[in-house]
Every structure is written in C-alpha cells, then in structure tokens.
Length: 247
Image (cartoon, rainbow, N blue to C red; front, top):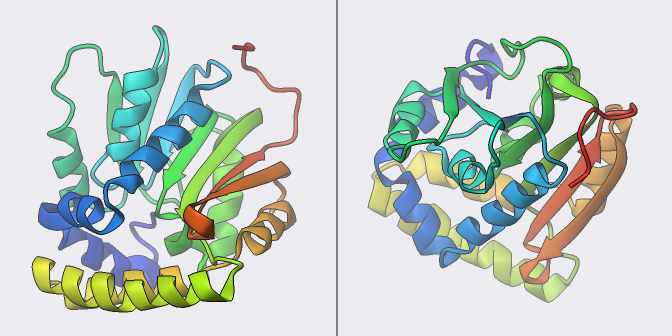
C-alpha cells in the first residue's frame, strides 16, 4: 500500500503493529477460508503462465506463498508492501529452496517498477484499504494499471457486500462482535480491527467494485462470490493483446 502518502500513514502505522497475531486472527475468524480463497486467487494469477507476477500489499506474504507453490519454472514473483514489519514476518515463511519471491518495501502510489512489468497482479484482502474512502484511490488504480502488461490480469480477492439483507445483517453482526471486539482483544490492537471491521462492512458490492474498475480503465471485468456473497473474486485486464502464453 502507500508508504509515503499522508493519507496512508495511519494505516501504515496500524499494519506495522499487528504482524505477530495477524495470521492467527485471519485463520481463527475466517475458519481458514481466507487461505482457500487466496489459493483460488493465486491459481487465477498463474493461469496464463505469467513470467512475472506481483503480490500487491502482500502483508505477511500468504498470497505470494500460495503463488510460489503453484509457480512453474521460469516464473518470478515480487511481493510489495508498505509495512516493513509485515514484510519481515512474511519472509520467514519462505524457507524452501526454489521459492523465488522478492520482497520489496514500496508505495502503491509510486511503484518501483517499469510500465507493463507484470503479466499478473494479485491482491488479497487489502484492496479496500486502497479504494474505500481513500482520497488517493484514483492514483493507486492508475499506478496498478501502469505496471500491468498489455493484456495482463488483475486478480482481487476481497470482502464484499452481500446482496441478501439477512446475510448482510449476520455478516455485519459478526464483523462488529467477533472481528472488531474479539480480534482487537486478542491482538491488543482494538483500533486496527475496528477499522478493518468497519471497512469490510461498508465496502462496495461486487457490482459497484466492477464499475469502479471499469471507470479506472480496466477491461473485461468479471467476478464471482463466495460464502453467500461475503467475499468476492474480481478479474480485470489491461487493454491490449497480452504477452502471455496460453496454459
């Protein structure tokens, strides 16, 4: 996410304080479904045999780890985040030989990569931090599009607003009680999980997020939902002929 943006500094501080319990809380309060959804996102990133893949806002590296587990010879993965403590926590997971992942401390508003560098970009449960009530939203979307190769794919797995009023009510209750209160209690970082619960509850519907991506210049936007709509996987492409081989 954004390392030097004034708007992002509170988020940067917040995420730098939670690495020790971040994975534990994710597993506990999603019943490990977050790992399953990341694997699906990683599979989508790897589907067209990309040469270079970016895990954007990698956090503790779970999506990059899943990508590495599915990568074929010759594929390279970059993992970027604005929180050094998160990156250091993530690097501890990469101990097996052949897991070619480069960790980079970086700002989504000014990514340290050339235009069209990546054949695929994945982001797991961090996209709402970039676009939900964020005044830098358009800048972030433009930068993501810039470093994506022509024909390249953006893969987003993120919480979503369920269509069903009953499911939405239950989801909101769960986020406010279990995630906001209990996760805050476990981590000792109540403000961080209060923000995470609030942003999840109020984030876009899948259709609204698709509209946002299209208005930002992405093409062929599509999505599918999981668990009655509380999570969604979005695919979006940069316009162009593409530079990836078919699988």
